[in-house]
Amino acid sequence: MLDKDGNNRGRRRSRVIRKIVPWLFSTVWISAVQSQGITRSTGLGIRGSFWKTNNQILSIRVNSLQTASDVQVEGLGGELTFFSRLHDSWFLESSVGSVARVHVENTDFLKSGTDVSVMIPFNLGARYDFLTGWVRSAVQPYVCAGVGTYWMIQTAVKSEGIADALISAQSGFKFGGYAGFGTHLTLASWFALNFDARHHLVDFSSANPNSGFEIGFGFCFMWGRQREIFQVQAVRVIVADIYPAYYRFYNTYPLAMATIRNTAEFPIEVNLRSWIDGVTDGVRQSGFVSIPKGETKDLPVYLLFGPGLLRAETREPAVIDLEIEARAGVTLRKSFSAQVVVHSRNAWNGDIDKLPVFVTPDDPAVQSLSRGILKEDTAAALSGLQKYRHARLLFEVLSRRGIRYQSDPNIPFDRDDRVQFAPATLSSGTGDCDDLAVLFASLFESVGIPAAFVDVKDPKASQAHVYLLFDTGLPPDQGQLLTSNEKRTVVRENATGTATLWIPLETTLVQSGFETAWKQGAIQYTQDGVLRQGLAEGWVKTIDIQ
Image 1 (cartoon, rainbow, N blue to C red):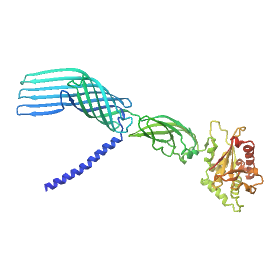
Image 2: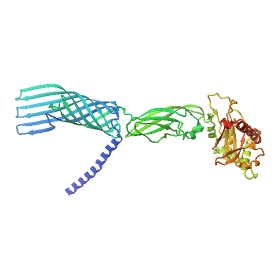
Image 3: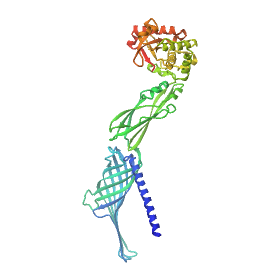
Image 4: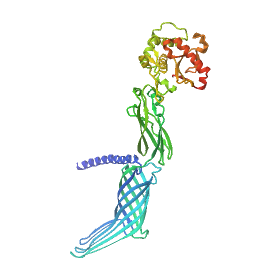
């Protein structure tokens, strides 16, 4: 029964050991692979050492007889080391240690003798971690060398009676040096284990009785600045002014550029995290990008914007927060910021290429209005004229409802233009040229009628102007279905690359009706774009909505 219980206990202990040992190994290994070299600039190490000099060997002997005993301990020592980084993988080391030889002998009850020899080395040296520049590892071997003084102290005590004792002591200094190698196992950025072996030359002579080999094992605590593996050389803002209406565009266009240099001698991976507190819809990450050793790379900075940006009512300064993290065994992070300005939801910088972002054919108010108007149209249209008839009906209904043109107030040159979204223009009943062009473009696009803006920056005029083109869908050889005057239509390609007839509309004349707006739009397009060569010279531009 006892044997059976003993066997059970043995099996249980075996199972526990089989579980604990792999866990301890994996814990140390995981900690190790997540670290890299001596990452801190300063440290303090403590280690025990074993010496084999010419005049002693590593040994502990105890002999005991009935009337005599002999105890001898040789070669045990210790050391306290302080180190500080000089440059990259070079460290300055200063250390103080000791190694002792103790011999205690008792020949009988009254006679005894004690001999103590102590060597205390004070050394100043240098260490080079020769793999940290090109191998990612927590195990970092190094070589070291130094010079200093070796203080020798010898003390002897002999006793031949109860009251008689003879004490002698002598000491002296010798200069010497050492060279060796070792390795660190970095378990955390502040803690590492280390093992090393050194050869000491006291009096710079291998024949000196105190010269010999030393083997040490210990640990060190580290603090101070971490070793950099990358530098952020510049963060350049590309888009200093953020316009809420352009938020979809910003999601695919970099707002800044970060220049990052790999200062390590091995490849690193860098990830950019960027956001604006209270403005963006979260943190945008670039994903880890590899940078080869010694190279510099420009990484684009994107932000994550959503429709919530359109809630901005005033122009306010904002800060792009950047967190740049690099990993190469360990993960290091640096934070930067860049100043930008977030404008109001209706702000427009005057760039005609960006005006289509204000067109909202999927807005519920726009769709409800356009479809409600066309639902009342029960008259049959000639084949191919549906888009023309629908556009004309939408324009005429809004004309009858009193939508009218009203110019913007005088805006200083350093201020943005202001563009209303279609629901705001419908609600207020007024708008300037770009507001009305956006309104009708939204209505036309909501029922499948392609539209385009015509931007006129006449060099002889003080202000720019915008009006509208819409696609009738008719081929050029069927223009007689629309008008007998071919100058009232424009032949251009639609989104599919097919040439069709487009009608220009001067939307500021909404109160005057469709015919007047069509006539004036055609006159402007012919005079400015064709006769005065505005299209050829570039001061007349046509921008498709989609």
